[in-house]
Length: 149
Figure 1 (cartoon, rainbow, N blue to C red):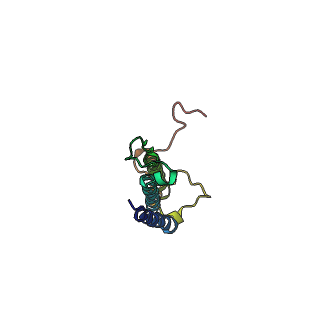
Figure 2 (cartoon, helix red, strand yellow):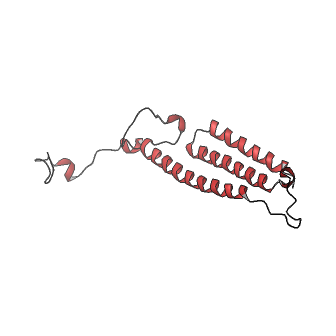
């Protein structure tokens, strides 16, 4: 197997992922670009493990009598990366959904990290008219039963 082609494809995928992380404004697209970079690393791990390492290490080829097969460490590391990527997607999408609920946008440039606005909600919810009905028009006579003051 000639590992040059998968290495070039992995480098292109990783470069495309870096471009997506650096130039995208949408948080979901940034998460997709991170996943692209992780998949490029997976391709590198599997390709490097499948490349003929026996000649470089001085071992006889695996087909020769008495030769022990080399461990499949690239595939094992790839499984770990896939598990970490799945956890990253779950946590990342939860953060993006909460960000949308609180700020009303998932654009990275519009998110202010230095100001905290608890329970502000999207602008459409904040600008909604006040409650109408008997509870909103009836004056309160005192604290609610069971309220500690």
